[in-house]
Length: 111
Image (cartoon, rainbow, N blue to C red; front, side, top):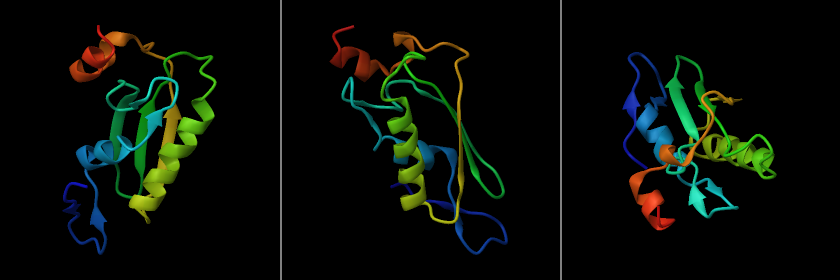
C-alpha cells in the first residue's frame, strides 16, 4: 500500500485518492478476472474530512456479481482503512464501455 498522508491536526493517517484506488485493485470482477480499477469501474474517489466517497459502476446494470463486488469494496476499505467509513454509490452515467479499461487490461483481452 502506498504511504498515507497525514491530515493536519488529525490523529489518524488520512488516505489520499490514489492510495484508495490502489487498495481497490484488490477487488476482482470474477466474471472477467480483472480488478475493478483497471476495468474502469471506479469513476471517482473522494476523501472527505470524515469518510471516503466512491462513485462506481458495473459493466452492465444486469451484472449478476454487482452486490458481491460492492460488498468486497466495502470490506477491503473497512479492513485496510479502519476509522474511514466508505460511502459507495453505484452510478450508471456515464455508461461503462471497454474504452474505460486501462490500456494493459484491454491488451490482456486482445483489444
